[in-house]
Every structure is written in C-alpha cells, then in structure tokens.
Amino acid sequence: MALERPRIMIDVHCHILPGLDDGPKTMEGAVEMCAIARADGVETIVATPHMLNGLYKVEREDILAGVAELNQACGKEGINISILPGADIRVDHELGQLLEAAKTLEEAGAKIERIVAVIDRGEGGRENIEKAGYSFESILTKGDLGIA
Image (cartoon, rainbow, N blue to C red; front, side):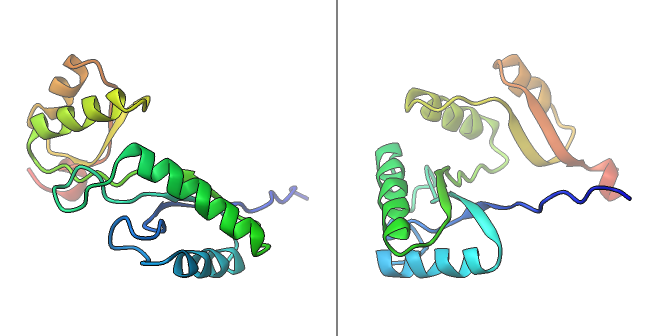
C-alpha cells in the first residue's frame, strides 16, 4: 500500500493585490478572493501584479506593502492562507526588453535564477540570454508543436 502524500495547492499567478492593476479594486475584494481560494484548497498565493508593461506603474515597494497588508487582513479574518510577492512581466519577442526587465528586477533587489519561456522558437534567444549570464529553459519548443 503506497503512502498518500498530502495535497498542497499553490496559485503561482494571481492578480490579487488591491488597486495595483486589473485585480480587485479594494482590500475587501482581495480578502474575499483569498477566502474563496482557501475554501477551494489553495494554501499559498503568489501575488503577481502587472509590472513593467507600460500600462500600470507598479513598483517593488508597492508589491511588498500590498502583500504585507493582505496577509494581515486575511489573518484578521481568520483566513489561513499565505500571500507571497511576485510580478507578471510581459515580454514580447524583443529580447532587449526581456534583458532590460531582468536588469530592472535585479536592481530592485530580485534574484533571477532562470528565465523561462513558454515556447523556445529556436531563433537565438536561448543563446543570447545565456550569454547575458542567465539560465534559460522553455516549456515547449516549436518542434513540440509540430512547427518547423
């Protein structure tokens, strides 16, 4: 008989911090989202507001303060959930934009362990990212999708 592992659910991409982007407008709305997530079995949420996309002006300090405030508000409501800081950074096909975003994040105190692409198009991006000193991995390649 195999031992059953406890199931842990973590939401790694959630626009949950109030007033920073297209997530909830109020703290009450964010706390309600946390209560729903917890009822669904989520134990940890990585708060990922849009950052460096030209639409929302979100700074590292905004994220850290928002995470602290939301954790405190959830605690006051008896919601046993952990909110962690993150960011949603849109990077298009322009490699320079990606490397600029990585540099900006490092200057803000982030440690970048690797850059992950959804699809490696095999057009030199991996090589350029690694030449800039970052580890790179992709979830899929063009070949995985049957694209030559």
